[in-house]
Image 1: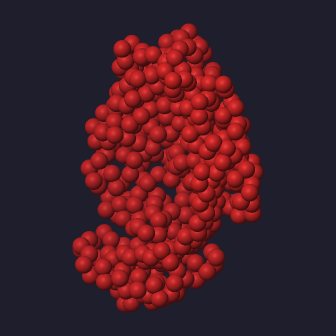
Image 2: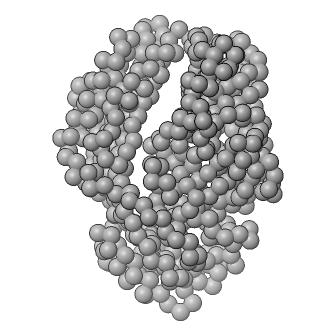
Image 3: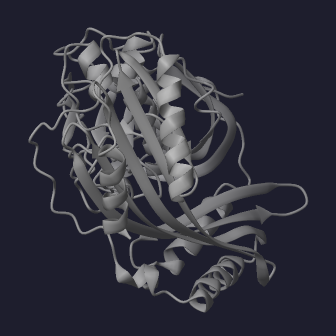
Length: 447
């Protein structure tokens, strides 16, 4: 199929007219999702999707069209539509397809036959087993809201008149569980997961026990007193936090006036020891890949290095507009033109795990979960306020559970007040990995 997608791209690009830049992205994907509930299969979906996206740039105008099929007649119509759309496009001298930049492609093996050969019955069994294990994990578990298995296998090819011709295939799988613990007077929700490329190696025990622990340990929670205190962000919370930071470190955010870090490259924006990277070439990342959405090689980009802002991420357009080069951060599907985004974010881990970190904190809060994080952050001013729950840290030990409080600061202040990164790097089913992060002087608003 991958070779067929490349040949399809070749055939489209070969039809470019004089003065046209032409790009074709062709995709073939198969996704499966199994959800168990109450000892039975609540839903099972397995779907194969194919599609083509065609971009035409001519006379400094851009046209784009896409179709959810690889049918030759539909592709002909899609190419005609893209050309027609270009005639109505806005003139922009910075428009242009990506140019090959000679960055070598990482040698990544992101495909495992185990996913393609994993039987349907085995997928169903994983979801059912996970639900059973989560439900039996503690007598206080009232209900397993969901127990899910999901996998994905995909091939994609990008071919352009600028000489880009690249394709790849990759796969991934995960299990996740969400449970409710408590009684009629109080309930708490917990979530757990396991990710990998070989479904047979997914850790059901980890996913189930994580969900059970994260729900039961919050039972009996109360509001903390308001004050300024040291917080330890749990890995899942840190992953959300760095994703927000990275969203302001893109050329697209700068062009839209939505980056509080514009014009600050070379300045200290975080505490020494804070290094934020986007590295799709790390095969451990769930979203690893050897190419970006424009067919350029992905690469390890250091956004913040030892506290200093090093760079912004770019696709070819934002780089051209801002006098930079693409950083291999074009993101897209076949039904969209390239945007800019981080692909596989993480903080460079430190030397101590979460338990060791907590043992050295006299008074603080472990932030286990947050709510409304994206709506509670202003990416322009950096103002930060979000609901949270977690556990008190007292004299180096976890104490009583806490809930219904908010944590507030600014993104800028939190980066500068970060004092330690944990060693407990966790690969999540998302574009950001998690790790424990200690931040001083955060406002906790409770009772």
